[in-house]
Length: 414
Image 1 (spheres, one colour):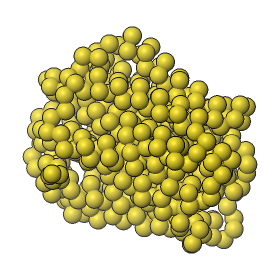
Image 2 (cartoon, one colour):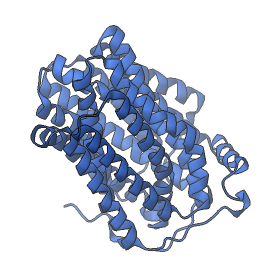
Image 3 (cartoon, helix red, strand yellow):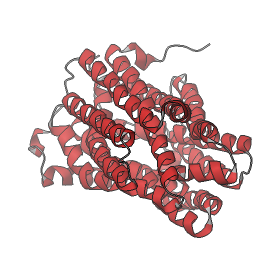
């Protein structure tokens, strides 16, 4: 019998969770619509890899600054601003497409601007969550965050093909713009959220940023989880190749492409729902490492697939393994980081978390250009497993991490 997860019993977190669910569905619809849009403009795989570059460069440039901003200014206000700007950029994509002015370079440009917005939104949003639930419910909150993200990532891609087929390419962009309103409403209902400000850091400056980096370097359990996340997703990310797999390997159309794109998230939702029902998650380190191994093996199977059913199933397993990994590593990092440092920790993590997939998309596009899409995917799965072995050899702390170690948090008020 399923029960209501404890984190959802906290009103303010529930509002944010529901708003995120709606907004993520729109964002994911736009991401996969962009991949399809680029494929209609060119048949060169490397062009899709360019999306990864456009999304990661702003994150690398602005993330360290945005983390200090999240620790020095009101996080709720920051999210208000970023969501509004993201909506305007989605409208810009729709207008450029609707009036026939869209080019690949416009897509790259708007994508880069959206990445700047995400660079400031991510640390503020992640650091806000522990201010909305008590420490005992934080792991549950992150499992629910994963459900919101992955459910949105099922709904969005699945609808993207239908929306493009029925309402045209611009329709997906306009729907995404409207979806940001859900988070804005949620933030209004949440009201003021107290947070601890690092007054010793004296605002956004180089010393504050350096303090955040030193903190992470001094925490092997946090640093190793970040590096493992980066290595695994760098080698095994090939989402931008999905249009080529759909069209050229599996020989399916845009609607089936949408369902294929949603497969990872379908598996991730199932895994997150199961974890949300677990009262206390133990042996977190071994479980985290095992999920990365499964992630790599399933990626290899996907690269070998020539049937839609097998490809969809392999992608679902990839998503389930990634969901387990995401929930555990986010819980570890947030519980081991004090509130006043949490924005800066998240900003550094953002570089690893987004840098791995986005640079990985570039790597996959380049390898696919030279050797074909299946080889790019298979070699990536092998690379992620080899990377895990090297990181665990250097930092073995994850192999014994249980999840009941002392934390750095004080329970926030509901």
